[in-house]
Image (cartoon, rainbow, N blue to C red; front, side, top):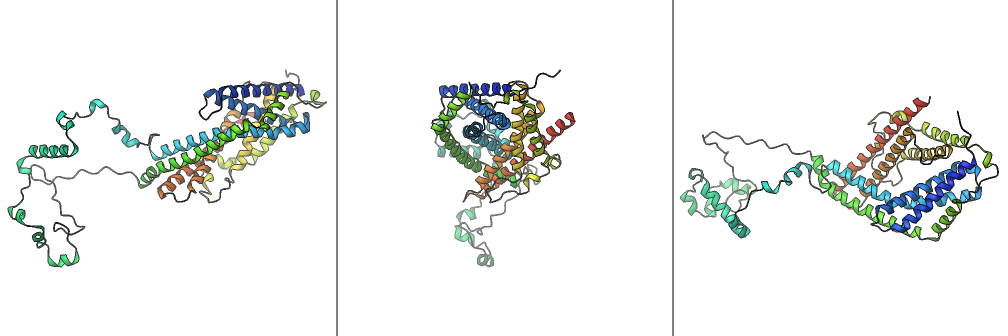
Length: 435
């Protein structure tokens, strides 16, 4: 049996609750501090501020016909400004972590910069290392090399020591040059000791004890040139991204501090304080059903999703997100705008459901939650790819660095495709269950 229809009173209760959460988070944010190295409580307080500001702004947008028009039109952009300003620092931090983790994964190195193939050998326990004799510890590097050389000579069999002919010992380098034919001297210049420059002497093939030529051990296959170039450029690419995004995060932090202390923010806080006690509803709001307005938000979301290329997104590895590649144009990727719009409309739909159900902290539909997470991943990957492309446009960077940034950009665009595929799966599942 269905309960009574939610009216403007439910909207007023929801707005008062979110305004109270905003003021509580603001007080906690001021108490815990907002420095660059703030505590985890300060980060949680900023997140709670953004959360309540988004919900108030979304409710003013969806149920605008039940509220005072001038007040809601003036309040919505201010709350969006607060939420966007506080979110920039966190966005740059998470973007840098995402890009560095992708670089380490693609180049085969761990966050410390050690190649994974050699990291096991570099971590040999101290007990397994060969002890150095006490006499050699006291000796210097030159004496150490001389002693090692003498010990190796003494331990080698006498038969293996190559005797030098007496005639060659007495000859000078000038006499050794006479052994080179005259025709070759005119063509190939001779080196310091009579050998032709650039032509090393032929080495005798090593033989086993029985006199049979011994085969040389096959060299292990080297890594692909692409992985080598990526490993070389990944370190410089990571340093470049770290420098650019850290600078952007510092500027965003300074902007947030200035915004929190500005008269504009204090005016918003005063309006939210008034909203916590009095909601400017219209005269007919208390008798108006909220469900048609919430259904209109759902219809706008459905229309936006219908315009998306879900059939193409349903095929994994379709490479649609890589069509444009690295472009010198700094305009955002044209394919991403409709997906970003769907993400915002999905958020409006979720918040409208909270108002209608009168359960701000109640259980969330898992399908909507999964779809929202997929769109968040889409947004993060798209912005990370744009940051990699922006770093690749830096003038006078090394070719290996540009190559690593290009591979990183392609990897993040593949993540964009994966997020689209995940959203398509969630949305199709929701459509089948509701039809």
